[in-house]
Length: 259
Ligand code: GLN
Image (cartoon, rainbow, N blue to C red):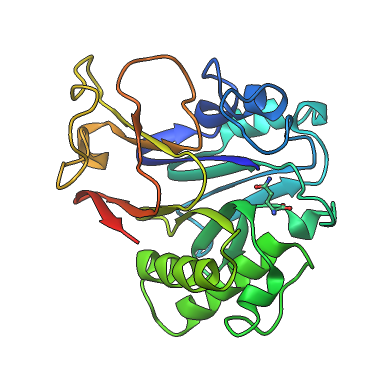
């Protein structure tokens, strides 16, 4: 089970997901706190962000442990965007360890990460080909095929998860994706947490309903929303997303739909 995290809001650096929080993805690469499958995430890592001068996201991914890349801290500090996604990987048994198997996968403006496992046969009628034999690469190819049909981000994720989940009852399909203006995530067998980051100290009370709530601090207010497999720190305000749901985060608010 890998770990992934994303941010939508006021521009910040990728270090805000990886190096700065006490339990950011760097720490989660060797000491995750809630991981149920696999103990460390040493089989690769990746990150993606949006630079206004390029039509597509910038992606950096490597098939080595995150802590071995000496160039990463400065790069993650310099890479800033209002929409960020990063992941660390522990390969499922039998899956190749290679860059093309490592999230984030990308197609046009979309970035995507998968926590979990799924039989590739469950995806064969949703995708023709994938850049790696890794199940996650096939999940990404299935989602990206929907994008090319003009389908929205959240709907594409939901359709692939529900279809593959029905074909493979043992599948775990926590997806996290973004398109530069919105985040979408699914819970299907693993944890996911959400935290609204305000420019000020006030936070919504823990446990308050996610349904219909506005992101506390929209991109315009200087705040934003963090989404992660497990909390990046011990600050109050992290809320668990229930299993088998689709989470949508945009400047308009946070929405949660059952799958
Ligand atoms: N099955 C995917 C892989 O092998 C994802 C693994 C995970 O979530 N740990 O990369």
